[in-house]
Image (cartoon, rainbow, N blue to C red; front, top):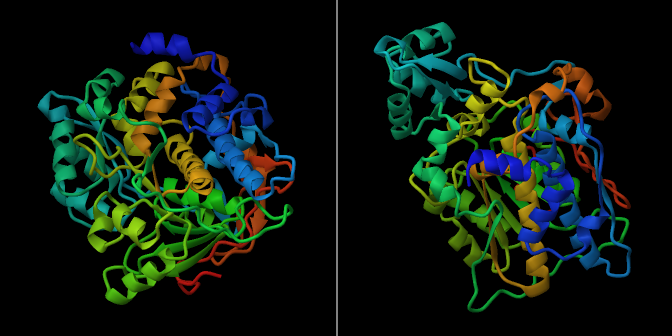
Amino acid sequence: MSLSSLDQKCAMQTAGDVLAMLWRDAGMPDGATGRVGFGPKAPGFPSSFAIGRAAQSAIAAAALAATELDALRHPGQVPQSVYVDAAHALAETTGYFTLNGERPSIWSPISGLYPCGAELGDPGHVRIHANFDHHRDGALQLLGLPVGAQTTKADVAQALKSWHALEFEQRATDAGLVVAALRTPEEWRAHPQALALQEQPLVQLTLLDADEPAPPLPWCETSPEQLPLAGLRVLDLTRILAGPVGARTLAAYGADVLMINSPHLPNIEAIADVSRGKRSALLDLAQPHGAAQLESLVRDAHVFLQGYRPGSLERLGFGVAEVAKMRPGIVYASLSAYGREGPWRDKRGFDSLVQTVTGMNRAEGDAFGDPSPRALPVQMLDYSAGFLLAFGTQVGLHRQATVGGTWHVQVALARVAQWLWEMGRLAVADQGEPGELEALVAPWLHTSSSGFGTLRAVSHAATLSRTPARWQCDSVPPGTHEPLWT
């Protein structure tokens, strides 16, 4: 199907339509989507992509799945209804927060999109993600520049004039760095990885023990006044935005989320925001004692959520097959950049990079009449993927509770990008001017104490009718807690 015909087919979809498709494709109970209400279109975030529709539907899917699990646990209760306001949903996807009244910078000085190839007569663009020092220094070393914080954005721009975009991307990929060459939508659709993604479900669920499925796992008894996922134990082994958002969403519905960090790896500034509702422990999985402690936690967990680079946890003994043997019946949820099939199945990537390679930046710039590529106004791939990961995890829990089995849930950022394309494009002339970010998020900000300082951040956008979603503990730095279940 051509992009233009796909646009025409999907342009009139509502958030309710998208939710209905997500729900149907996941095989969840019929009729439940009638319990969801959506607020009106939200101004202030103009985009040629249906970002409001994506945010509302992904959040609604996660929240509605929580109410289905709640209904399983309390069959005598009327199932809860769900409401998702569009402005609130988009505010949550901004990732806006302040600490002690200051808004931390979320980008390193040399991260960003650069023209390249000017001296070669082959103009193009590449995006460099350098928020971690080792990624920054790797890119600088590849460019022949001094490593460290003293090298400037102007230095990088000058060096890239003598590089072909695709050559720099490939060399960086071979070195394990996070770099993306800008592509047009047409170039991406012809790419082998895009073709591989067409065969992958948006939220993929796989039964791991089809011959002899594990029986349903016991959940602790709860009262109807408790949050839907009370007593559910979730191991959160994610670090960069989408995975932590998914685990934070489960925490908002009452799950006991234990975040496991490595003592040797850096974290992003947003950890203060995405750690709300979680306890936090440190384990070195490369050491026998750390691996043994994690295995002990796995044996009493209901969910194992991970966003490691493909193959990393397998080498440490905690791939999906190994964890399924440790804890039959567990739901193992995996997040990746480009999916687990195709030539880029092991390639690293983040929201901004996936936007660049999939043609979204080029298409957004063209839609606004901008000669330069343009990013989406929010990190919609990360946040949608996080909410969809929470949704898929709960679908896996629903199947586990009703038919048994050990389930693997998979979500990929690039497949989420394809999902946004499938929703169709919007006329930017009808959307008004961009709003001031602080004003757009202000109605939804909540202030709390945290282990990082006074945190002011956006509350969760889903409203549940009987048990309002909320985080039951403040965010804390990695290692604050012991690696134990409460």
